[in-house]
Length: 293
Image (cartoon, rainbow, N blue to C red; front, side, top):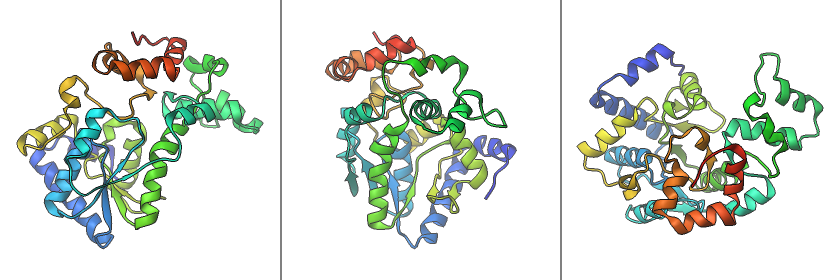
């Protein structure tokens, strides 16, 4: 069901108690629609932790899926081991294999996709769009990042597809279950547009998904954790405000210092050395002008 921008703003301004009630209705509707054949996509991060708690407060037996990409912080993996009824699926490729075959995830999913397509496509029409945009002036590589066309390393958006989406799709095909996702509209313009088009329950999307927390703010997540004494990964007590794949460079160019790689150097020095030197992420960030020391 479509949602207007004004309605989204209204929902985001609601008190937490009302947001919880709305999210519970979303969860119950999804659970009933799919005859209980649902699951929670559980990354071990704070958002999916709250989502799992909220779903299981209504339906305790709903399983969770952890897509083990091999790139999670050790504290995330340790925390996931403490949670019951969590299934694990793994990708076929490692991060090293992905960057060797396709390229590094830099700038953003959109821009890395455009750069990859321009450098690899045989379609002159597509390459022209990636340089100059389509009839609506969209779909082009930002002027700021055109210099990356000459980068001495590969760039692509394939990392998420190969490491995250593959194990998820494998689980869904095997079980037939439909996912609850702990995503919010504040995370990206793409997620905001999806919410405005479908609402929380995207029944008609190519891949049906439910995002009961879409209209929550980050403060709502922390307030819920404190009000309900929800256990969470200690990675957040080490100064990190977001988790995810350790070696992903999406958005690092916009982060204030200390950015996540500078923090990694302090909190996980061995992993940092492997990332910067062995995997070559230092060379990539040098090229795009990001300080990681």
